[in-house]
Structures are given as structure tokens and as C-alpha cells.
Image (cartoon, rainbow, N blue to C red):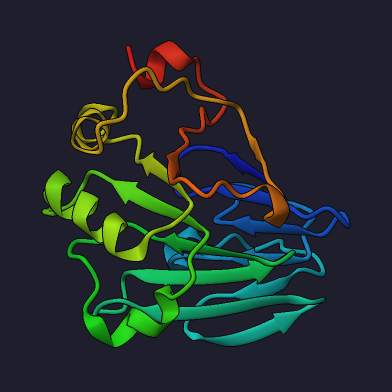
Length: 196
């Protein structure tokens, strides 16, 4: 599995067999599955892709996806993507941390992709939430409007030092570390733009 962040909520996931999952693509793309975090992010030309916008359990070409809204307003969604014996948990931008009723969705999380900034969640609460889930890999992402401020605070609380952003993460289930690690994806940006 290869994870590529393309800025804001846009992620591209390429599986070893060539299947492609896109989250919030900014333009028409070739993908087996496209996940949208909101109707405003939805693009019109999606070709033959299987589109998911909303809660439910889905199986597409051997990829298992469980989606749930995290708030009563249906503005925040969480996608659990299971493929290649890896459980990836993606959160759209959220204003508050999820409640216990979604906890079964969070079990056995290998990779946690979590938004930083533009919310009222304290960095220490994000750190505690991450500790509860115990992912093997934590990938924070931020929105353009927030820049690096919240990211720096969260990384400091997580006690992550000297982290170097990488353009993509290539991972297989057999290579998941036993020790938790935080990975920062560059999203096509210069590392200096992420953590000056």
C-alpha cells in the first residue's frame, strides 16, 4: 500500500495489485473507489469509479470500507478502509473528538490519518485520543487555512522531534512496526513549507 497526501483532505491510496482509492480528489481521476468527505468536495466526472459519500458498509473489489458520520449535523465522517491486511482509519475535519458509540469502528487501527487544526480540539486531547487507539502509524494532516501552527503543537505534545516530511509512505502489513510511529507526508510541498 502506498499513501500519498495531495493537500487538504485529498489522499491517494495505491494497493499492491494496482487498485486505487482516492479521498476527495480535486479533479477527475482514474480510481476504483472514490470517497468524499462532503457533498461540497464531490466532483462531477468520476468515470467508472465506485463512489462513497455517506455512512454504510461497502465491499468493492476486495476492499472493505466502513463509513460513519461522527456528528449529528452529518458534517464529519470517518472512513475505515481495510485492504491488504491493513486497517486504515481516516477522519475528515472534525470539531470535536468522536464519542464512544463509534468505538467499534476504531478497533485494530493500524494507520490513523487525522486532521489537525480548524477545530476546538486541544493538541493534548488529540494526543490522548491517539494513545487510546494505539495505531502503529499516525499521519497528521492539516488544512491550508491552518498552515503549521496546530501541527507543530501536536508534534510537540507527542514528543516527536526531528521529523522529516516524506512524499509518500509505502507499507505492507508484514512491515508494520511494533512501536508506534508518526509519519508526516509532504503533500507535494517543500519540507520547509511544512515545518520551517
